[in-house]
Length: 503
Ligand code: MLC
Ligand code: AMP
Image (cartoon, rainbow, N blue to C red):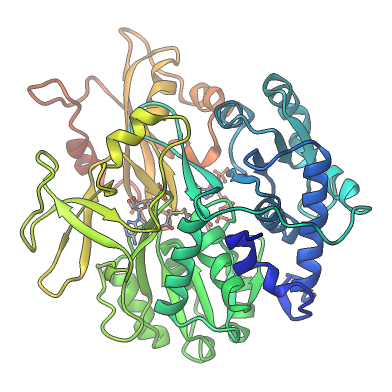
């Protein structure tokens, strides 16, 4: 019986002694050892009573074992639910409750704080630490190294990835085996990956970019990853000469450009640098080319869709654009009011359709219906245009979203928290240009009559429930918010006023 995702990406490597991951200490982990570890994890999940279709919530540091949980889920027919390590227990409680996860895997350091979350959701709690130790590893070590793969179809769910919305709570994007497989095989072709590639992997593995785009491609071709715990310039510089490819958010590239060690010689072995998740500035593209001779290839994707467009491997990689729709993806620009296609060169909302597009939001049929048309087109919430040569330009966002260092931050969530603080009448949260993160979070507060908001107290209060990367990096206190005649806060005016806050 078949399990398309496991069979195509993993099963073919069973018994393969080739290195899959090269770890920071220089040791290699072979494909075979990795898959044995995954099979043992799959046995632990089955022994815990998990059945195909159950959700496995994972909030752990990046490690080979963390990645093996993804493989274990694929093999056991479970739905992988990775979570940002920055999320607080309060944030996690929502994902666990909403997804109905049967098991939570976390670092031992947060076991105590997550214990009530697990109890409330009637979920089992296991630990997995950055060094691979923990209760999951303890239970796995005596398990068999082979696992009878659970049959699945391409329409079965492989992963649930949460993504926030402009209004309401985060939504779990349901991704099927077909979504993941089709996109990775398309990208292998477009970006010419082969078994000889060595990917410098410094992205987190709880998002589409580092998880599916990077990892699935390497698994599909049988290549190798230099698996780094996080982006750290010294490590990147040390390992560039041994690598052939790297995927990163724009912050990776601006930070590398700030390092005088980045030269043509250092990158001589590289064949491809890829950027995405946030806009790459034309200046960055050009400076990188001047310094290294490499033209960064920019592509455009989303949690709900995996990758949609890419600049060409051969041909002009046009700075400031995200290239062309991928071969099996249809992309159109439509009028936000009527949904009708816009003429070439005019700005409208970006819609996409293809085997990469998710099947809907977990248990949220109304939200799904708002964004996924019956025709199969998904309304991305991004604004863009297609130029006369067919290149897609992302011009802005219809959705109120901040992208900081490649992490999405939804102002509404922060505004609700700020509004509830003593002395705060109301607030507006915006993204402003930031030289390192692309955008940074700035909060504008309106004080209640005769009161002065206490910023350190506010920061301390929100820290309890809001991941650090979402915290405002700067506060302004104003007498009132600028509003249009309809009473809507004019965030554009605020963004303009504070655009030079972080020079
Ligand atoms: C860390 N911090 C951030 C942050 N990352 N703040 C805002 N935005 C971020 N992205 C904060 C920390 O809380 C900390 O705060 C301080 O910055 C330093 O932390 P750090 O851990 O040392 O940061 P660093 O390792 O330098 O991380 C920066 C980064 C990282 C840009 C390398 O965030 C990163 O790897 N981003 C990639 C995100 C990603 O993979 N996105 C893909 C989404 S998928 P303090 O004040 O406590 O010191 C997607 C679809 C698609 O979008 O198309 O790909
Ligand atoms: P996420 O919801 O985390 O998957 O983030 C997806 C969003 O990131 C998209 O809707 C875009 O707004 C943005 N994005 C991804 N790639 C690019 C890119 N190359 N340029 C500009 N924005 C991008």
